[in-house]
Image 1 (cartoon, rainbow, N blue to C red):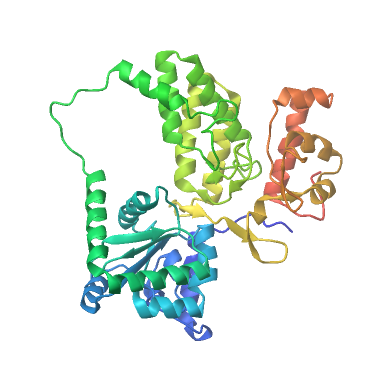
Image 2 (cartoon, helix red, strand yellow; image 1 turned 135 degrees about the vertical axis):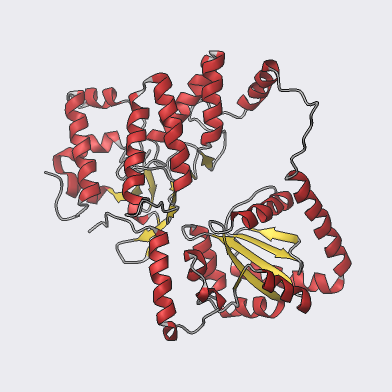
Amino acid sequence: MRPIYRLSVLLLFMVHGQAQKTDEMNFEHTNALINETSPYLLQHAHNPINWEAWSPEVLTRAKKENKFLLISIGYAACHWCHVMEHECFEDEEVAMVMNENFINIKIDREERPDIDHIYMDALQMMTGSGGWPLNIVALPDGRPFWGATYVKKNDWIKILTQLSEIYEKDTEKVKEYAQKLSEGIKAINLVEIKPNASVMTSGQIDKAVEHWSSYFDIFLGGYKRAPKFMMPVNLNFLLHYGIAKEDDKILEYVNTTLTKMAWGGIFDHVGGGFSRYSVDTKWHVPHFEKMLYDNGQLTSLYAKAYAATKNELYKETVERMIEFIKSELTDTSFGFYSSLDADSLNEAGELEEGAYYVWTEEELKSLLGNDFTIFKDYYNINSYGHWEHGNYVLIRDSEDEKIAKKHTIGLTEMKQILKKVVKYFWRNGTKETGPD
């Protein structure tokens, strides 16, 4: 049986966290995070590491003991946060190094976006990129001097040992670097008021867009790189710019991007809603977590694009996203859940990234019967749609009319068949029988 309704990770870990509080004797380790309410922090409450939540008292103690801060930031739905927890933070050898040399602080970025913002700026200044888990080593007063995202166990132990040795041998050099980095963080976040500053001219904006366009993937949408992020704010600007300037090239690029995203595996063709990003150039295989803020911004973007173009694909995408948000990210009290986990249970009952969202050809054949032939062509159950290990991520690459013509079937009839199949998967999902 393929599970249909995915529990929000927020609800899941809050329930799990309460169970932990009432039954701590079942765990070998319990740290200070057991007293927190954040689902992400509760996830780490039984690590052998002496995690603590961010607080002024912890910072005061760090200064008194003259110990480095090891600040690790993530969130409950983050796949690589789970991986690093399993490989490093659940490991006794790692815990020994961390507990002896550092005061260890865990932060939920969804609970403390203010702290996350500061240290993400620091990481990007140090390495040129960012992401989660966000791991920072800082002076006792919180000034960072080293950072990284996911790190494997052996490398993690080696790095932390070296950092401790460097601080003992050359304390002043470390403090000097941390001070310069701190000044840089302040500088990039400083908003200067310039009363005599001139507003950008239309010509300057044109030149900026022209330069920007050199990065556009005009065939597949997005930028010429992988992974591909959807960047709705950028596309929203380009949509308005293209309309205002009557720039057909920009509008074509926006349409290509919106179409390929909506056709891609990054969009859940069964349950609705967009995943975080795609790991490839054709929007096919997503990083399977789904974020509320992504889908909120994309709903607005596709709605504006539909208003401007009357493209039915955009309207359908908006409707599917709203349906997804209502059914999966909205609580009965009308609050919103922030995200859905990238990991889900596979058929062996083990957590695996994307397990819920992928299909084998054999199970689709057994479920769909005579409808499989159309479904196969429409969602590319072939080399184009294959991901790995015999699993397929549904992806489109053709207009409806082309598929209908190939199967000598009316467009309305084809859509009815596909709608029936998708509705069946979403409502039932059983592998023993298929849609009527």
